Length: 141
Ligand code: FES
Image (tube, rainbow, N blue to C red; front, top):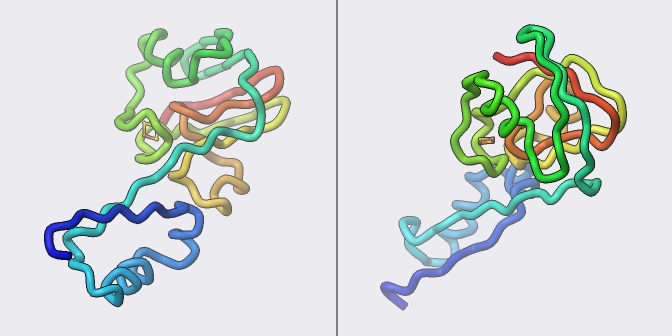
């Protein structure tokens, strides 16, 4: 049906595993126009409920509490750290910060980093990711 818009909902993790070219090929084989392909990603709700924790940024000499309804990015902005960001949904990766240490469990809630990158334990997306534990120590890029 010419002119019809069809949305294909995908799992971002699956898309990474099979690759975007495989998805495009699959779409092309359906005889639909490539220009009608729309991809959407969905936020990762996290593995743990939101809990408050202490955020430490040694470079800035900053230690602040992060409440259940705040993000690391919120607190960085409030502290005047001028962090980079764009989507605030864990999709673009611009807000990624280096983490230096933590106590508790890391809760990566972004869809930007691959599972492998998340396991490396080097960066996290400040707009959505957090810890379930006592404290998180980060550095800014
Ligand atoms: S602002 Fe885009 S991932 Fe955080």
